[in-house]
Length: 120
Image 1: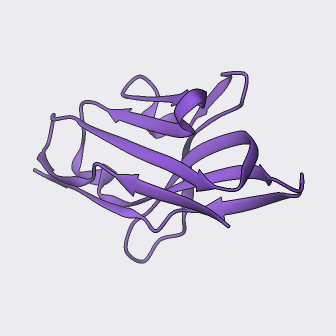
Image 2 (image 1 turned 30 degrees about the horizontal axis):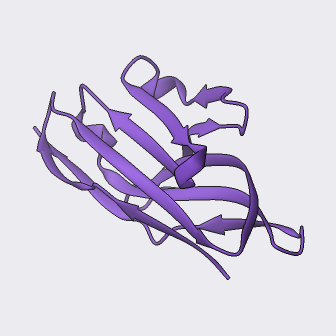
Image 3 (image 1 turned 180 degrees about the vertical axis):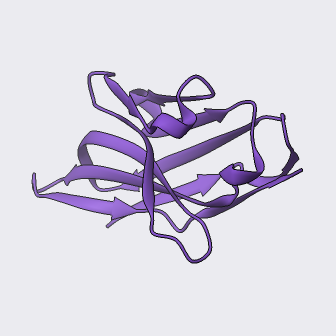
């Protein structure tokens, strides 16, 4: 089985920074794309940022210039550096990854979510 475990959420004042981490573990052959989504109360879950195995990145317009996604393939970990945080960034942040297991079967996995709260 494969698991994604997130860490790094919390409460921060507007203008502050947080760094989220998501580590994949289990029977992993290869991790393809990895990404972060967020879901605010009463809203749908939206893509925040994604990164391919080759390092190409994609960001939501609302976070461009403020958030940076990166990954450490040796550690099977993806990061989200969030700077200049705004109250509207408040949400539960979920890690997501496309992972091929030891049998070369590819599945999409979600982490359990980590709360980010930005106070004004």
